[in-house]
Amino acid sequence: MIDFELPAELQELRQRVDVFIREKVVPLEHDPRQKPHIHESLRKDLVALGRDAGLLSPHAPEDYGGLGLDHRGMAVVFEAATWSPLGHLALNIQAPDEGNVNLLMQVASPAQKSRLLPPLVSGDLRTVFTMTETATDGAGSDPSLLQTVAQQDGDGFLISGRKYMISGIEGAGINIVMARTLDPRGEDLGASMFFVEMDAPGFK
Image (cartoon, rainbow, N blue to C red; front, side):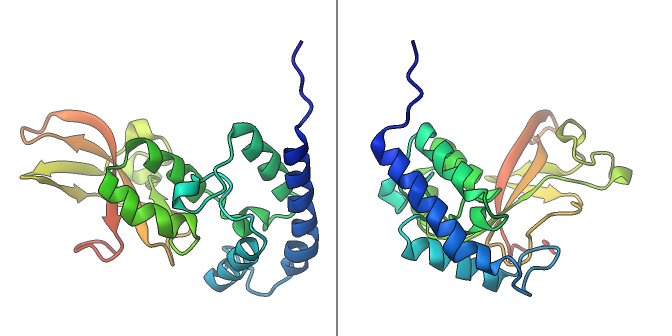
């Protein structure tokens, strides 16, 4: 028989998150900086509250400044955070950054991890995921129809295409671009994701 009872430490953590959300985050729900997208200054204020409470980045490894929780611990914290629509920002668990921490842990090189994970876990860096294209370009939100192409060029890639409706791109520090990847002969290798600096030549 499976025991679903939470251990005492997770019950205590859930209570801490619950009190934090109700007392510190909920009062900011009517902050005028809430527009169709949350203003970056409000996000930073929320991150500072989460940091002060010792609750920032429960999903991230302790080596990079996170709480290092397992899946059960993350589920408990994430659920408690949803009491407020701003809770995910205060704990730095919003999309796509939460998922990108996990992605980086799995596939990034040591150099990429050391450069990107500390500021991402601390909430000082935001990523943006650039996949959606206009319906006239053929893809919309269906990655199997991607029209953006990354052509292998020497030891790098030249990315060509147009993206559309990319949430949170203003204020992001790293752009993760999804594109169809071609080898030097033009053979389609399938979809890949590329780290693109926000000030990369040709990107606007």
